[in-house]
Image 1 (cartoon, helix red, strand yellow):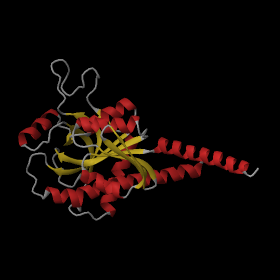
Image 2 (cartoon, rainbow, N blue to C red):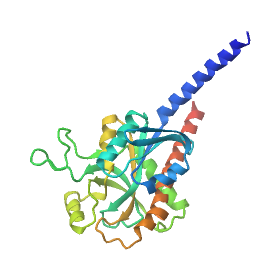
Image 3 (cartoon, rainbow, N blue to C red):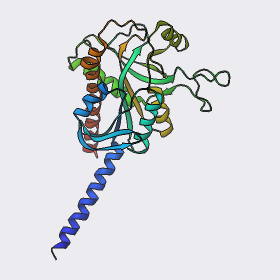
Length: 277
């Protein structure tokens, strides 16, 4: 009759693990990086659980700062970004998405090393005129997509803390700004290209190749989104820095550390909630 306690223990353990797994799905944060340099630091510190390969992408599951995460290297451009976001939303069943990476600065006063937290996103190369207004997504009725206010503030505070407490080369004087991020399938590296975007979108702070397409998928999936971008150039080809060195030794560290600080805050918030119930 000794098998009964063992069987009962097995059922209890299975039920406990099911609850743990379900809780992980309910609280899992999806993290998207576009470039290997942005992805590497986070992947290296991941308490790895498993990797799933689907539609040509690898989703890495595990714990980061004691938070369940699904980490994906999406590649550059709007299609790669949308595909990766759809996989996190539909397959990994994440509860929120954080995006980290580089961008070109557009706004006056922004310099290399500054951090932009996206409060809204728009596709600067979306143009179906004369059928629809410039930048409006055809048949969708909108052009600008906002980020989730709580994640925006989470990343802004995380970036501020990171700059204050982490000594990263070239970021000693960096500041954090919040505003519109413009996205397009173009690497903007000329004055003409930059000026065209600024003229059409004078409030845009920076330009990248992924954020607005990620935002569109998150909007459709009703997923909260937060985006942080490190300014790597002025989007006009005039940056007087060693780009590869800056990415490897400054920007990639800032990207990874900001995400870690944000996840630590989520862990503290979760612990405080657990103690209050």
